Image 1 (cartoon, one colour):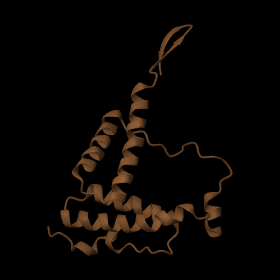
Image 2 (cartoon, one colour; image 1 turned 30 degrees about the vertical axis):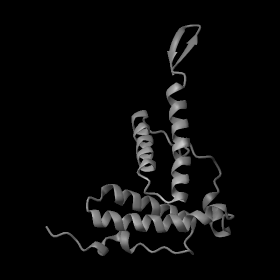
Image 3 (tube, helix red, strand yellow; image 1 turned 90 degrees about the horizontal axis):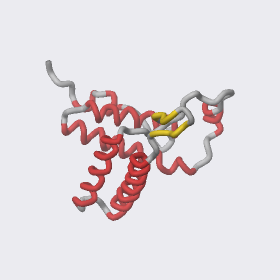
Image 4 (cartoon, rainbow, N blue to C red; image 1 turned 135 degrees about the vertical axis):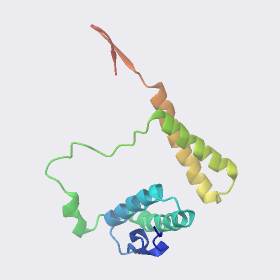
Length: 148
């Protein structure tokens, strides 16, 4: 079976620009990451990374702007959701994330700006990792010890 041409893939034709709403940019970022994880072709991976980077670059300045009027209704609810976004990787995965960032910083391939960002991320992740590992796991009660 022939491989489809590189730019016929929907990720490469997904339109976005500086006028795209932040919610749509966030959706696009998720699509790009999903495509990146599923992709095995190095050229396509690089192209998807470039699209993700461009989308993130457009998304970043919108984070400090007020929510546009036309999006306020879609972000307003009558009852709070039962689930909130959480970041709860397994400890072994968190350890791999920290190790990857450490190796990336040691490689000295990042610009000074990106090195600072990676260092900040590593600091936050290692702090979270350490807090998670040192968190209580059992609770003493009148009935004995309970697993948390």
